Length: 176
Image (cartoon, helix red, strand yellow):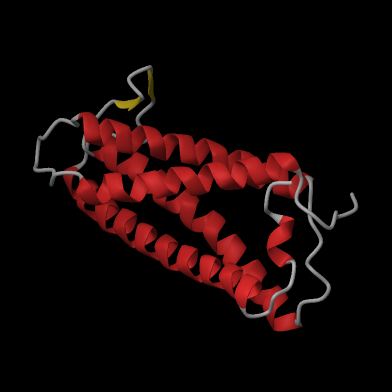
């Protein structure tokens, strides 16, 4: 399989859908009321879980698409930028997967049925476990912060390519 020079339409759509959903997901998570022991999930939590599950499905599709439709690194970039780009991109995949799966585990350890937009339930990944819940909550929060840091680095690099380097790197992922 020969890598292409630009991302195809499916890759772009999946990328921007994940961006949009993450832009919705972070405020939902931050604005949600604190959850106390034995608190059932309310509508904000169901929405947070549902958006997370949607992000999980999309990032898995995006990952499979990337593996089966590779895009060549931009040859005009210096080696350090190509390497850092790869590290950040793979880090984004890992942290999106880590944050969504730890969120699902969080709900499972709380004993919650995991509902996707009140349409259907998904299986619990583990049995109710208060000690596991405390541990996974910390991992979930750490994954979300690491993901946010990687997002800031990624966006910063994209902006640098637009305004500092003034190259056409961003054109590879923009619609059109």
